[in-house]
Length: 566
Image (cartoon, rainbow, N blue to C red; front, side):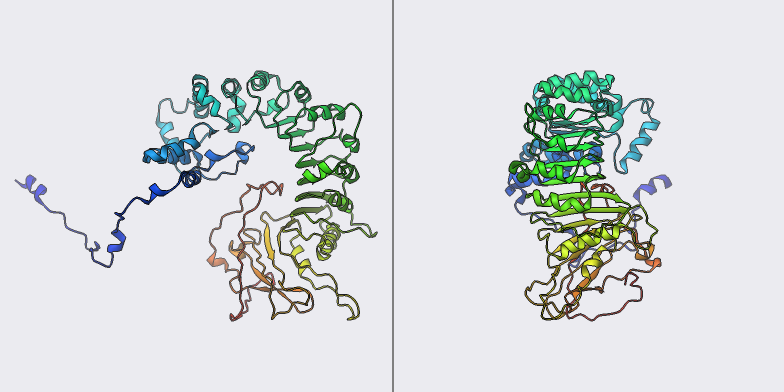
């Protein structure tokens, strides 16, 4: 009988169990009205589903490693599939995202589930013997080759590095069933003319005429010349890395690409000013949206200016990237800016060993330039006055002279450059004209050689014009932020300051009330700045620190002994 008494015992309630009352009834309230989600149009639903699974709407021409989609892509796809099965009216909208338009295969889960699945594979008998990414690629191959409708929908395929290097045969069979393919991650040997990728090249040339991006490395010259046979005439992005090709052959290749909009040349020792010259029997150098030159030492600013004398070329060029081209000096940048009448972005990087000459150099002048990446690295870093200081003084002079009125974003490799803009110009006699003053909103991203994060400074000048700014008038606001580059004493918090007019035509930076660094005992972990913009290359991607637009008028000012940057 004692055994059956155990089943008749009632469980006692815990002592601290919350009791229901009207005070906490709001936490258990549920909505019983009409379903408002039925009123959402398909356009809004699709936008919501794109946020659930961002990589499903990825139609960029970037590789798997540079797509810029954070999070776990496998879990995002699972969540999107659940959304499609939640309601019948949602299925058609969600199906447009996950049904073979942009395909991505990942080797692992980028979340905590990977530890769980790894443990399950370890305990399984054949778990470690199966290469999961290769098995998924083979399943994709069977799907697109067995169903013509699905194969025609595939436009983008993103693959991890080891998969595209080890499964070249499966990759060739996959692309043979995707006639509308526009971009696919390919092995490195494909770009260098490796014989092991010959089958893959033949399938891609014969089956996929809509490829939009292609790259050729050293050794792929013969493959580059094959473009003259009419392959991939829809190419819009072409990258040439250390290839050895005659300029006349290059002009013929470019003449076969009517949709080309971006050209990147790296290490082109064969390239010089004559590459842009008109020659009988050769098509002209095409007008492009983006030009990128890296370590092309035979090209000068005068040669590019000749190319930009054509109104069609000057009106189309929007982005110009010049990195480590010794023949294009800072003193000749004003020539490029004057001829590039529609330029929006200029990315210039150089390593200097001497300061600018004493001869006067015309300021950089452009009425269309919106973004400038100006990275000058001095080889002699232990000098009292490094050579790069004169180049940043030249840039500051161009800004203070109002020669770049449309500039809104500036990247420099000098952490002290924002202070140069806030210095007051020298006072002049009252009989003379007032000196030019920096009077445009500008976002400055600066960092030194030993810093990994950009220091963001946003400067807003006084709105009033025609009179000297004062403290009582409208004052500009600045926000300094350094997420990790300021040391542990900053606690990972953003460095912020307020820039105000000093009453003498210049600016003065004062600390904000909430800008004091915390003590080392109150440090909290902070997220690092994403390398999605990959700004060790400093371009290509944009950093996304958020500025805090602050106004402290009428508040009590308090001093801080911990304000180290002051």
